[in-house]
Length: 382
Ligand SMILES: Cc1cc2nc3c(=O)[nH]c(=O)nc-3n(C[C@H](O)[C@H](O)[C@H](O)COP(=O)(O)OP(=O)(O)OC[C@H]3O[C@@H](n4cnc5c(N)ncnc54)[C@H](O)[C@@H]3O)c2cc1C
Image: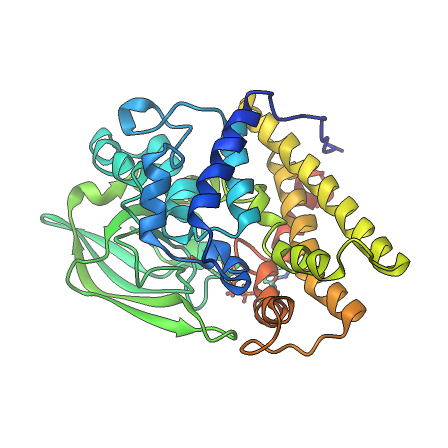
């Protein structure tokens, strides 16, 4: 039986200077961010803010300089992510492109795709979305039915994608479509495409979520024509490519900091004279947080050393997701707040928002059950 292992890793000393630079930048930009807006962080959408980050070299920062990157380490990128999320910065415009779409194009894209797209992502000019899920293909991604048919001059796409975060504001989608065979072929015959969402035959319809926000969408393709060079990598290898892409999203600080604003506001309300009971609660939550951070930094260290920490990353997402999902519930059990999203205190407003969105934390990026299946398989238990 295999095992997983979190070797101790720490952020190198030179990241301290970078952290100071980021904090100075955030101090300049964050003056008018409300607690409620900060609680939304990676749902917070601000193209101007993304451009400011791009101008400082903080998007695509590990990529080669010839594609607009800064050739910095994964651990330096880690510091940028955790400072942004801790401050509740609005990073949604560039988040998916920086974390997934850019690295995917760097690895599998053509030279033309890399030269055209990556520098624009790094400047904070492009928003991407991920077109994997469909009405009958959520956890079961291999059941994809949206079809891309090769024709003279390119590919004709018909079908629909569901729950596509930011499709209504993105310029591009990385879409996974069936290019041959039928759904019974499962993983075979799937291919990835760089989809310019402004092309005719593509309709994006926002879906309102429980909190009233419109973050994800249905995207319908009606015989939409994509150019021949929209194919990413090789036809029929989209499944392997898409799974490699998902590995990029599983272990970062976004997997345990999504509801951190509730803890920050609670500590602020309690002040230095907190009761023993309150201090014990804060101590317990902080200990969990610090442990998750150490595990997550350990995964970042393994990625930097070009190792493959797939199981460790899934463990961090599973434990981190449980932590960030339970945090508002634990705080509410302690504080018994009136959750008023409009007129409440900062803590009440943050809690009102988070209580409505936390159920999604164990769905997005792969459900808890699917992740545990991956961990069990990795350990040789199934
Ligand atoms: C906020 C948010 C943003 C999202 N953004 C995107 C996006 O940008 N792009 C995108 O493509 N998708 C996106 N998704 C979709 C997300 O990836 C899917 O919701 C998720 O993969 C689950 O698929 P499903 O909703 O079809 O549920 P189902 O697959 O129908 O699952 C329903 C339940 O059954 C369980 N289940 C299913 N199969 C198994 C199994 N084999 N064993 C045990 N349990 C099982 C699941 O764990 C879950 O609890 C987003 C979802 C959310 C909530």
